[in-house]
Length: 461
Image 1 (tube, one colour):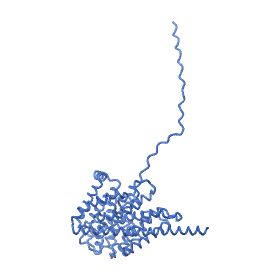
Image 2 (cartoon, helix red, strand yellow):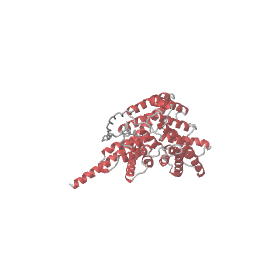
Image 3 (tube, helix red, strand yellow):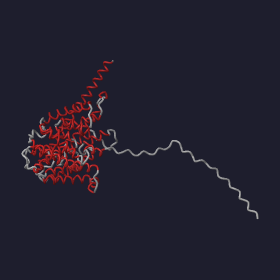
Image 4 (tube, rainbow, N blue to C red):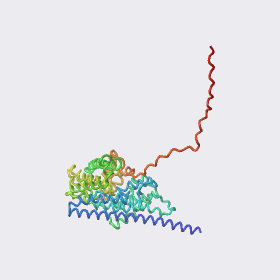
């Protein structure tokens, strides 16, 4: 009998491990499917734009209205990046909310509508939403794990979110640091093991289906030592200020935006989304379509030295397009657009510094600095950029820019994702009614009525 119980316990243990491993593989498959779908939609939009330059004036506002209606009608909770929703669920998992923030329905909406938003020309990314997708899948798998594993739901959510960011960028180290920096402020031995296993399995699936190599390919990064010191200072200051102001605008729009435009957005969200689409179409026409979508192609062109078709003011329009896309309320993240904004900022700085010979290093520094300033996650940011462009030889410079830019950003705003998570916090409970006393208060003492006094005798004469 004891041997039978022991074998049954081992069976349950291995069933739980197998369930977790399959979940990590599932996160990798979902990340790849999301990437393929978003890239396909983005490519189709660019093909249409090359044939019919007027198409964004129709497709982008109409797509914004349709996709926002689908999100609000069928997938509430899937709007925006997805990282704030994941953090809000972890802070109050059992809170009463009007809509769940992590579920299978969220997975479907995040992938389909998020890819559709890229295909409509909105300046949004898929990396942040993949965090919510991975966290939702692991959240749902927790119910199948045996209790003997002693794995909490929060640990699985962290592992799923980290695996999602690692598979989306094909950067396993960045996934680990993202889990430590953003999703948990401290990682114990047990949860760190779960994170690493999930990232390895999701990364294997991603590399098997997408291929190895770096996100932007093998980019040669070179710079002279003297130039590098100047570029670190310039990139830190410029990206820190720009990223801090950008994050401040996002927080203000989500939590404290007031005025007639904000009121119009609340009363007529679909019309407002159409107006955002028209603004993006106008900015796309002014930049020859460079601001549409995630910004991968123009960023890669800048890193490869092919910047002839990009104006120096691409940075301003890409930042504005990303902010307007965020205002529309569609599902989509800011990771990939932030990297594109950073590359555009570095491109603008090359004009300021006299178009140096090895401008690629300045672009990479500005990318790491802007992403670190916008998210205030400096370690994750410089590791993402380092793994994306094979920048291991310049890790000290990337680290310095990311840290300095993040510190400068704190002068303008608090951490982005932790602050935006307040938007999804559960409503405070109603005030409790005053307790009624169980014993009635004693009645006031009764006073007997005073007897009437006899009239006094009249005085004698």
